[in-house]
Length: 257
Ligand code: NAP
Image 1: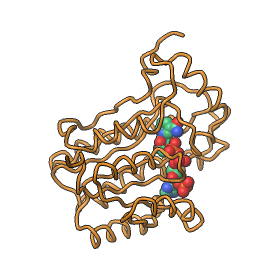
Image 2: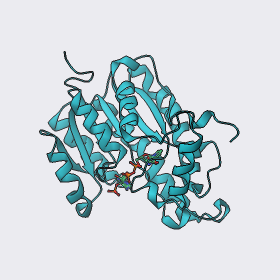
Image 3: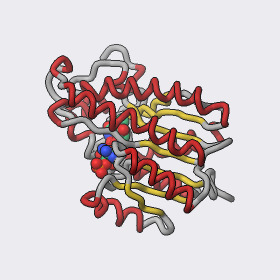
């Protein structure tokens, strides 16, 4: 039987370590027959990503700091040369300065706000614009968000505001790109112990609490997110766009604990 994304070309941004959500998604896509391209932010980080990329034979490894327009354009050019078309884009990238991820949101600095929005939100817009010429009917984009976009989560602060903007961007992008047959969706994942998550003050306490109150009484695993991403990125979700799909063991429906 052929895979759900057999022969599709998939670009995955955001692999930093074996724990990265992007890495779980990349592996799942590879299992289902996709051709993969992974990116790294800079030479220092390349050495973490290269062994992972090499463990999936045939995977392309390309540089892309998403804050650099030239690098985004070069990435699109490289994929145009290598593949000619792109079926799948996974945006699993976010960043806020550590000092913005503790204390009060009201104390967010102008620079901290700008950086969080640029890396975590505008990057999706820039990538969609640069890659649009390579995408067409049946292409699918997925980004990663979190409940802190709509509820106040202690210490999540500017990243919650960035995720709200990211989710709004998903709707606008879905509207812009829909007429070409390109779908754009987000997955709102429950807390997972990754490098990015550990930058948030009190993450471990929050992670433990979620397990106690989520309807399914467990923490979210990256593999669960990857399975949902596979659905959204495959033709099974051909009627779904502009959506935020929760993969959090039901935590978001709980109103009182
Ligand atoms: P992660 O492994 O640390 O991945 C975050 C990625 O963002 C890293 O690969 C990082 O690359 C990349 N990045 C940051 N700045 C960049 C830049 N300027 N250019 C290119 N890449 C850049 O953490 P993760 O938890 O898997 O995060 C992936 C996504 O899931 C994020 O959007 C996050 O907000 C979201 N999410 C996470 C959770 C959770 O609890 N873990 C829950 C819901 C949503 P470098 O390390 O190379 O800088």
